[in-house]
Length: 334
Ligand code: ADP
Image (cartoon, rainbow, N blue to C red; front, side, top):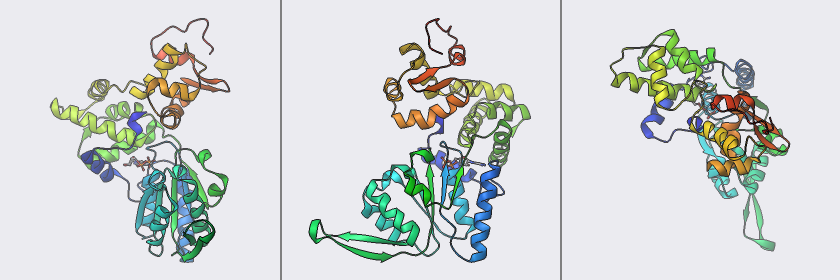
């Protein structure tokens, strides 16, 4: 889970940026989203208008920001980046919107975390390319209409379900990003290895791809860790053994579970006897925000058949006990 989180260290961030595909052709996988997006962009180019607003949904690290950058690049438009949590007041949003240039692409990450008043301002901006700036308070408050240049909003959310209906409806197109197959992750890794000038065997690539939880950001991150390991150990060609030794050291297990994933499963099994337990209780037990557990760790654990969601809460599935090397007690729920 934590491996999928955006990268904080400056040097690592630079590397991540360098590895970003710059156009749709270099973007691996997500066939459906790529086709749909390419059609939206082609049509708007023909009409000579800015593209429809686009919503990208899916777990972190699957390429939402990358696609926003690609939209801007393909439309030959500048890109402005902000995020829901950064927009707490309607005024914050008004400031961004009023400084956009004609045709600009505005990327709003974690759009579901915007404040209510900002969200309502965004409705009007998306639909009519204007906003009402409220000046004054109470009975004396006046709305000053402000015309905006036409722009393309690219919103990103970890879960489209978290978005209020009226906001969701104002996007011309929603792309649901799926976890990547091991084969697709191998392609991502081959491309990155080429850019970083690294030599890997096919088995080396598949070892890393298999531990990357279906997520390109994680694949690239693990590749960099393996690269460090190879450098220090004087390994020239990275094979499966090198990759697996390096990744074992970084506590990424053979199924790709990282520390957060395992601590969620361990809490579920050890503290709650396998559940069912409410999501927020589980989050407190691992010392994480509910949203992190729900959007970062859980989708992967569910997909792997390790964790189940029931009306009464989360449960550890038999595979979870097995993965942790534990015997499932007779009185556990699953
Ligand atoms: P998100 O915004 O969904 O969290 P990003 O767009 O920031 O994810 O992607 C994280 C990293 O993963 C990027 O640096 C990029 O290099 C890589 N990446 C994501 N999707 C792809 C893809 N389809 N093909 C190649 N690399 C990708």
